[in-house]
Length: 282
Image (cartoon, rainbow, N blue to C red; front, top):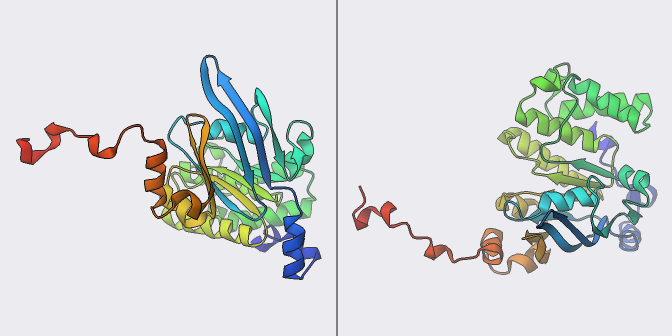
């Protein structure tokens, strides 16, 4: 079953919860970003972003379109080299120790391209062997992931024929396959049907409950508020706010806090008189 993937490496060797808490607190953060910056031509996409994702946390990364979230994620996992700054995954420098760092993280980029002429099963089998997993383990985990994510019926369907929602699920399966300690997910529920979304949420919640760490980038404030215990708001390439969910939102909803941090004008000034029927509109 999927529990093979969602085991807690701390409690697996140390069954005492108190000792596990002490041991986990002594670990380096699941993800640590120090002063990441990136520009494209004259445009500054990310400027001096520093964030810490504690082990065992469900961390939400939110921001308006073009704020720099995807660029930050790409630099954090080694898909894009920063101009300045460093990224560490469980203490491993992503650029100095890429093999070690990337073995500890599962990534679900937004709009990830995949081998279109492979089936879902072939993709997971190929990536499992590429990561050096034993054949028996690859087969077991592939069966589990296809089953849990509702893709068994499409296991021999080419990726080219997958719907947008099916693509999200198979990419999540590739991120989980090697049982990483950290998942970094960019818009994981976009275009996913409600039943599949509920399944994915349960998988992620169990992953965190078992000692894993998740970074979730999303535009859906209600989703972040539902799942995450910590959150950072990125705006114009900078960290506008970061902390526990309670610290960032205060006495407001996360959506209200988000708008207050990033909006350049008050929402009550957005008056379109021609839409006001009482003012004489049609």
